[in-house]
Amino acid sequence: MVNAFSTRNGRFSLSGLMKGADYMAVFRVEKNRDYTVMSNHHLRNADLSLKSKGLLSQMLSLPEEWDYTLKGLSQINREGIDAIREAIRELERAGYVTRTRVRNEKGQLGAADYVIHEFPVPPKPALENPTQDKPISENPTLENPMQENPTQLNKELSSKELSNTDLLNNHSIPILSTLSKGEAAQPQERKGNGSTNMDAVRAYEEVIKDNIEYCYLIQDKNIDRGMLDEIVSLMLETVCTRRKVIRIAGDDYPAELVKSKFMKLNSSHIQFVIDCMHQNTTKIRNIKKYLLAVLFNAPNTIDSYYTALVAHDMASGAFLSQEREGDTL
Image (tube, rainbow, N blue to C red; front, side, top):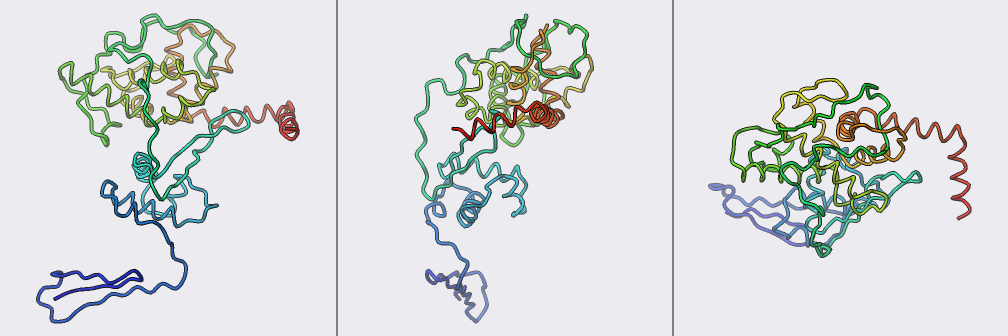
């Protein structure tokens, strides 16, 4: 017994699916309009998951003027944004999707600009030190943090002088188990040897950099590489701490809450932190404590910050002035 189905490209047979049947089932597909012509390259690529093949096929079928965003793609599929993001990253690694970040008129990083390819684009040659000039040590943050005149971020911080005690101090030895990719956002603490600990730290570092799109941020000429690496180091220390409670701006928070918020930070939040640092004119007594507070509050304050900034520019006429300057270019 042979089951068969036909398409406009040919006829295929499936045997053994209906044992004992004495008839032949035939399936035919008729297409007269609204169909997509695309390369079979990705469909025959055994290194791609079925999810990624389907998503790429769908993106190739969409009109060129369609707004390719993670939210937009999730709205026309059953999968959520996280599942769409993972499929996009797989396609990026395979070379079928390339992504760049552009800045708006205020210098802020905007939405990602995707270029979709029917045939994979070869990756760029890797640099000798693609991530950091200075590798992270077991205690990556200094005991006496920098206390120059960096700019301040959060207007809601307590006016009381912050303690000079480090966030982690002697509690910063990571005791995390080696993590799979799906488990990275859920820290699990257990005792282990030094080698396992450092493997876990590296796993967390990779996830954090992936979440904040580190590889794109370091390509931005307006972002200070040293400041970005300090932020990553602080985030890494925080998610690897043994402490049950973490003090932020004078208040104690459960460590798991702080870790969860840090693992959800993205490139927009990091850009917000850096922008606020550049706007600040107040002396910061403890930069480490200060950055910790701003990172923790970033998801709650980012929208209000930029809304107030735009309102200020509109009221002062700066926004109109920028538009006139743009018209003359």
